[in-house]
Length: 151
Image (cartoon, rainbow, N blue to C red; front, side, top):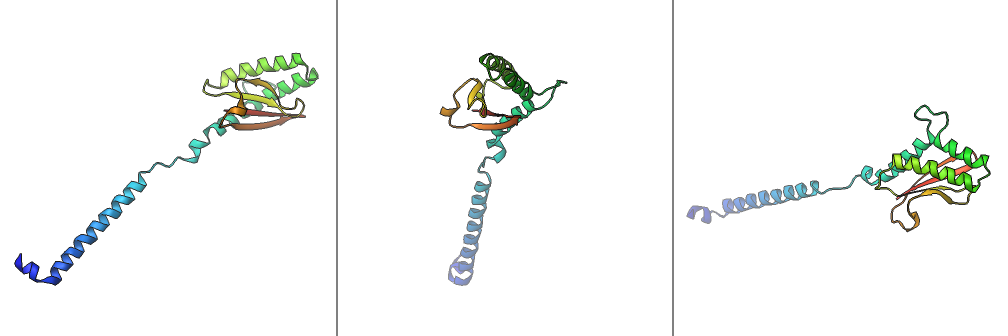
């Protein structure tokens, strides 16, 4: 041990080696900590957006062997009765049945016609204007333009 202290060159190189190993371990620990940080993926953030688009796509599709899509049916009811109050009630009933079947209780929605009815909600279970996060899906059929707000 006395020889080690008197020989300055080897003692300094030993300290230099220990210091470099310590620095290397610190860098590896820092990299490991950075690798463990959770970063939310874009797919998690856009899940509600996908849901609103999926629901609107179901409404626009001819599923279950039907001859008309739900959007076509709603447009026909409104146009054949000149957008009367009775046609709006019938459309509301159809839409309420549809949304109760396809949406969970976790979602609030508003289904709005923006062209003929000037933004009147045809079916709704909440106020999307006061919500912090709203996802919108839009479809057009004929002269009617529909927006589905999910919040």
